[in-house]
Figure 1 (spheres, rainbow, N blue to C red):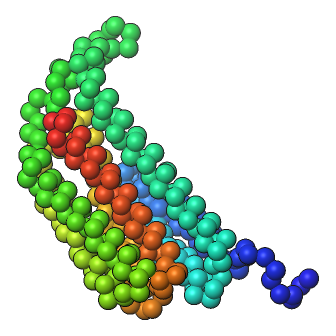
Figure 2 (figure 1 turned 60 degrees about the vertical axis):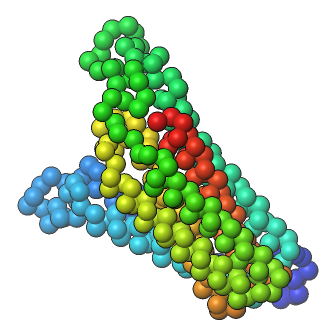
Figure 3 (figure 1 turned 45 degrees about the vertical axis):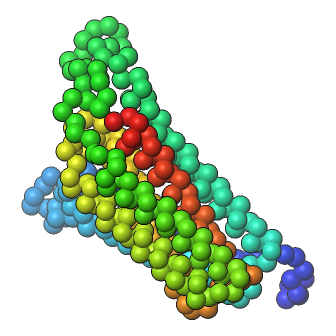
Length: 292
């Protein structure tokens, strides 16, 4: 009956503008990518040439800012719902299922990059001199005869890559410390565990950026460079996202949002961070050590 007390465990969300705002922002972002890569105008006399010429970043930036605004607003509303007590045990379980499925989708995402890297690293010799119909197609297949391709100077895996591996493994222990401390009511321990984890995540990004400046192979000049930068670069993006995720949890902890009984935001961030750790271990083992 309208106006009656709620007699179920589900939360019926209020009307929200964020799906529409996010869709518009995503559309603008997609158009911005097209403009940045290919351009939509070659008429230098047009008033829109500055925005639509190839390489113009402004529409792309506008779409990106719209996405960030949507994230802040939408997740902010979810936090408000949690603080109001709308997240019942049933809703909380649904959030957990959602986070698990999201991480599974991320596993499939990285599986694609590993598949490409393994195919190139293991079966490169099969492609040497091959063509689809037996007719040369003007492509030099000599680069397929060995892996890494000739002229590629790979990284020493036991230098910067090993340092970053140790950084991430240490960050996995500090985020576990933070979670365990919060579960036992030790808010100070949880705070310092998160501070350490955020600092270690930022340090990983700095070390990886430094490593990239010393890569003696370019992004698109060979298959090794393409697979290396796509796999490690997307992982680096996930580290940045996870660091922001944990930083927001730190701010929420300081604001008193988390309790020993109710802290799924921090738990989800910890799950995500452990996923990032495990993916890096596979990258380090296969990309840096075994197939180099």
